[in-house]
Length: 360
Image (cartoon, rainbow, N blue to C red; front, side, top):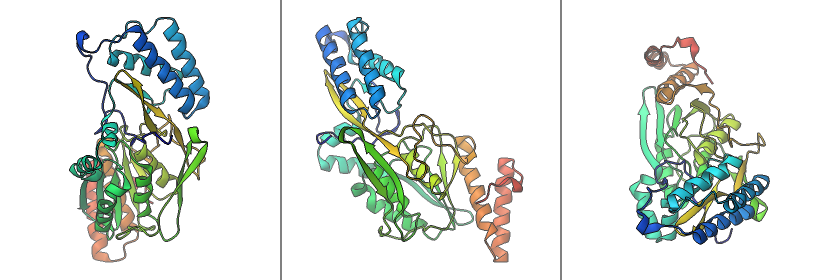
């Protein structure tokens, strides 16, 4: 683990993630029998040593070595073909959506291996994952957040964004296009939604080192907090994955947010890249999330929304739920009438009766 690079675990297909490349021309990148064997054996060794679920690692190793001996990879003469076959076979033992073999290293491995200056410039170009801030009708804050980048890169932007949202009466955090990221950044952003006491959010059990790493809120984050009392809504989709799922799961387990949208992707195992040689890279899950409230995680099942709606309806529905929650505690007659008007418009657009609101 000391020499491994912890990759920001993103959903396959997420911004910055990279699918296996198209097969190259035979003259360019053909793999011989000895090269294929070296790749397969390197993958089997890596899984045995580091894959987070040891019992499944043993099954994966046995499958790979058996298939190699039986000649089942003889036709995989290009990295992309071999990567596809290996991913299929190891996932056939246990369908871990983080686990995969790529015909090339993903972009984040290249970033980590490159200069810090290049990494920072790439993060700046993506605005550190912060896509959009908005104040919706009814004084409802909205944050469209696409990636949990490293805290030392994204922390200042996070503080500025949360300070902007601090005086809103409710908050919607949109993770429908968020494929994951750094668990430390997950805890940092969660910290803005709690109070002056540290809250235990999540643990990561790291199998190769046999240790557990704890993640807590920080009561002393910079900028202004949204705080522990006002309603929070998190939007999810089937694309929401890994660290984004952790953010949603953390808040749901602590009853700090209402989740609106779809069941998420179901990946609770952070990964590290392992070079297999001959242009192939394995993304090997080496740790698992253990929530201190539930004792479990969302691996394979996804995070279940509290209000299940199609992803493209989630923002409007959450806005309706937020306005309904604000209205319930609003005593000023003029503001209350305005909130009722907003809620009625949203309910009509959604085809809901006002009493259908989930509330808080």
